Length: 157
Image 1: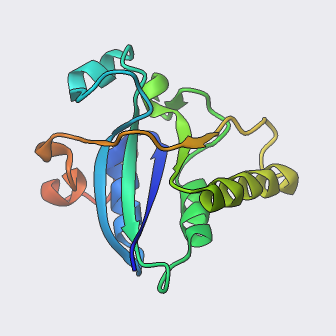
Image 2 (image 1 turned 60 degrees about the vertical axis):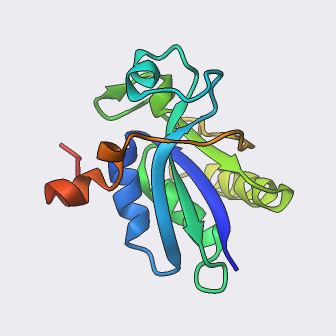
């Protein structure tokens, strides 16, 4: 049995590499989701007018890794208090977002966000959006597993 999870946590290169490391993750794809253009290109998404976020769609085996464990990894990957940016990357395409594929995922994501907010880990409010997934558009081939292709472990400065 396979399930999908989709996360936006800044530039998709590092996010994809981080999810690829997890046992139970069967496949990851960098792409675009949450906007209004059909078949957006990287250039259109980067301009910031397509409404899409850079995301990673994760195909996982729930017998090996739970959705809750994927959420834990998601929160570790970025600063969920930064609106429309992560590090040096600025724009709505880099927003913190969880795109859910079922009512159960929506409920787990909201509970996870509430628990993180209640933990006091951050002094600023969490701005992560949680919305039902719409059409996922895979990014261009050169973006897929970009860091691995370049022999890089991270894209962090």
